[in-house]
Length: 187
Image 1 (tube, rainbow, N blue to C red):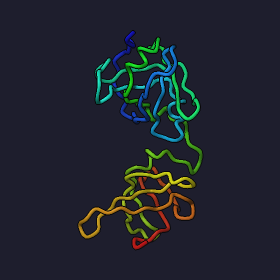
Image 2 (image 1 turned 135 degrees about the horizontal axis):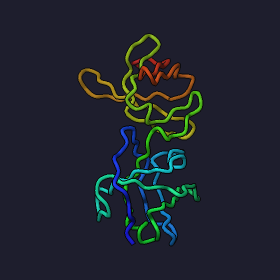
Image 3 (image 1 turned 90 degrees about the vertical axis):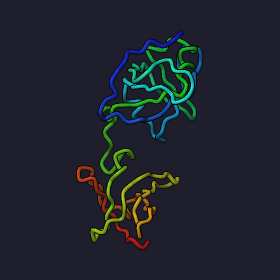
């Protein structure tokens, strides 16, 4: 059976948080490949927006709304069920679909906690105000996260990495879109 989705407009604050990997079980549940090691956004929102996979058959066009019944962790993955997906066949047809969630439905982070998506694009300067680059990516290295900065030197694109720990990060100002770090350009 094909899922029956309602066409929707992608919210202006939508963030892509994962993809549907495959069907799970026979009652319409499906596995998710979350883009975050802590997929709280998937658990906190009951309204997911789907866009079709880039490859393979498409069971819908454009953006559709999926109303989530339940999403939870299972072993080393995330599984979910939806009101619009009644059986395994319908779940299998969604393989590869991209999942978006409104940023407004993300849980509020604690003080000194940040969503990676909020750090991307921020300018990083040192204590003296010298620009160090712009956050282009973050890397989880086990015990800590590392900011990956893009900058230019002698007209050539370069990368700089700074551990995202309190020993090196003085301040994150999301409103000003700026991070201040105890770091020198020649490190």
